[in-house]
Length: 115
Length: 115
DNA sequence: TTGACGTATTCCGTTATGGGTATACGATAG
DNA sequence: CTATCGTATACCCATAACGGAATACGTCAA
Image 1: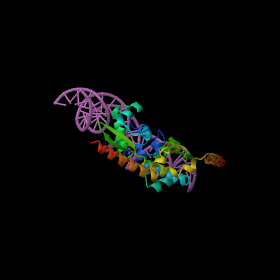
Image 2: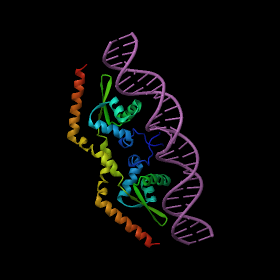
Image 3: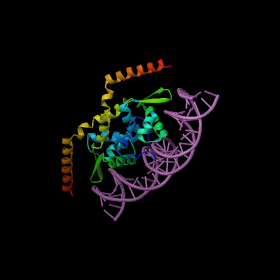
């Protein structure tokens, strides 16, 4: 088995920075492909390919409007990521970071004692 | 360019389900490698390799204890993901999802009118 | 010192990425 | 009907992932 497909889930789709940028731009408003091409400074085919990935994990919706294709964000699938992360939120408060550091030092000192 | 390395950042490291499982297990307590091997039902080398990735993005810390290596979670880097996600939280409330659906239908009806 | 244990590394094969470039395709303007 | 616009797809290349299997390495027990 190789690495999971980028279209496997939101985690994989969003691991690519360009695709995060695209979502950020679509979060502002619905946009046609050429808008994204300009704003990202990427070649049009690459943008279309990233959009395909985002479509396949249902992070964007498309709508035909004449010869343009309007892309809209659909943030629902991001919730899976958020749900997974939620259990870690407590860990990265300032106070906890400090406690973590102190504990780590204690553990290391203790390990030294055992030499 | 190929796909970004799994060690490029927390986004890529955490895109792999096994590595999320490992973090979940380490969130409970510090553990030696063999604990993870048993709990995950994976071969030991694969676990060591996943741990290497997690180490390289600083999501885990190691500590030598005799012939064992104790792994501890370091959730700090997850914060980057959380920060990026935060701007989307508002989008996936029930009420917004409903509004989204209604808007989508209106847009589609409108598009039909233009035929 | 030797052997067993716990863990890391290396090599292999399969798979798919992301960018580049060329091209195909549908819709609309003239 | 044809040319052009907006977009999607196909093809190529370089890169690296992940799992499997073998093996190397450091630590401790006898």
